Image 1 (cartoon, rainbow, N blue to C red):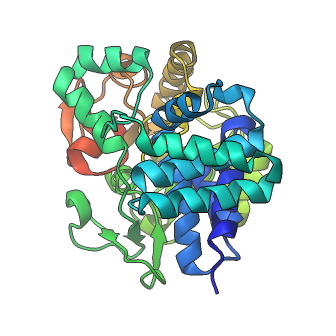
Image 2: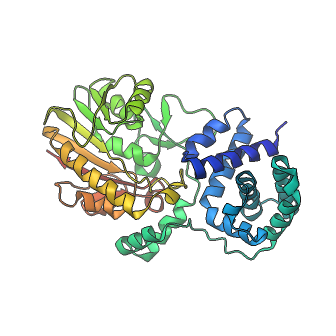
Image 3: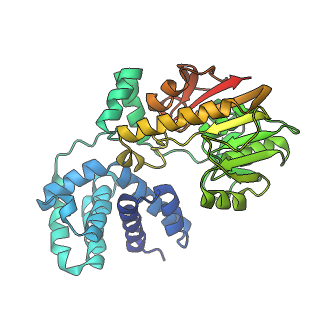
Length: 387
């Protein structure tokens, strides 16, 4: 028999670790719920992502209900209040049931605050809140997107980033044009994966498709860990000829376990330990802010600021310049970042000989943008250089 308190408690624990310890919600929600039934795993993930997508509104409701700032509350109690408030505001349960379930959840953490929990959750259920359909994005980011795209497209991005993404897989043997017009990308229903497929967002699949490696080519994947795109390149080349470079020793070790067919190398992508003009294909999926992945990792918006984006953009320019020198005559370089900031996309590529690839999305500068409001995928900027 399922235990809804257990699932809610696990969700609250995941939320606390994501917000206080830097954990990634998509990874931790999966591992923390692994022992539960499929139904309860789904409950945990729904609660975790629901709270993180609506955190600002939920915390506002809790502050009003308790009369205290959320950070003044005990961490464990606060996280359980967040789960309970989410179910009241967004979960679709009848209010008395949601309030009762929330009190039970918080009583299990600390019986002495059951009265506070009851009063707070009843207050949440009666507050006149603006339950916006948009994800709240940092003001600096909204200003930049509105300036680049216009006000309505920026708000479309915020609305789409708050939606649950489809479960997309890549057919490893390739396939016809699939989800969002991207070859090999298909929607997978809950349950076992289709044969010879891997879970991968369609925008990432598009990046690999653009590389278009073939057997016999020498291919370099820069900043390759954890190896999802590396595996795609190996599938294109017949399982050999791919060098995977990453500067982090632990990530290289993990990548080598996940994708052992590649030749993994520890090295700095800004100063790659590779012979110049020696690769037929070079993929630079550069380190970035990750602000295109908000549907799957909504906490990213809480961790990144404008100064970090500027520092990442400087690194991306260094890595792109270095990668350009590794492409053999007649070869192809693909630059990609899973973000939407102008600093990391059009402003990085502006001074380089790059062009938009032939993939879904819209042309932006000398690249192409995929995004949740445009292609129902992660936000991804892709540009190519033909040597």
